[in-house]
Amino acid sequence: MLNLAKKKIIIQATGKRKKAIARAIARAGNGKIFINNKSLEVFEPEMLRLMIKEPLLLAENVGKDLDINVNVRGGGIFGQASATRQAIAKALVKYDKTLKEKFLNYDKTLLVADFRRTEVHKPSRSRKGARRHKQRSKR
Image 1 (cartoon, rainbow, N blue to C red):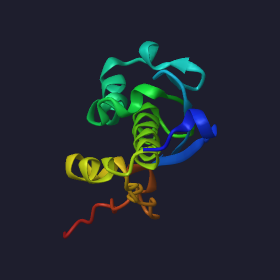
Image 2: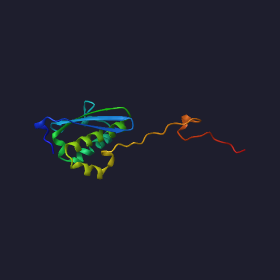
Image 3: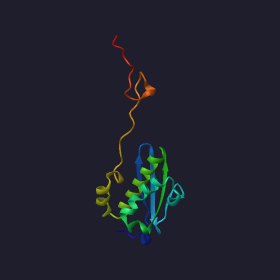
């Protein structure tokens, strides 16, 4: 474990989910987390707040001496929450390497980005979906 207070080290990590990109900056502190300059405690809805807290709960006491500031842009609220969660987890792993195996065993998406994207809509019935075709009559 690094001693950030003595060296004044700043840890940077990124997380991605769909179109959302989160950038986390961790410094020595007392466990405060801000997302787009708002405290995690006022983040709504509650389900997403709990989802973002998962890496901190798994890390137990490791995150207590880090202040993490996350800037997240793009995508919807669920994509932003997932990207934030991943950025926080990656920052914690950079701080303490022993957490990597624990995070991977719990949920691989904490450290590995999900590469899936929505399929491009094709011509013919483009509004209806990517694979929809015109209905054919046999008689």
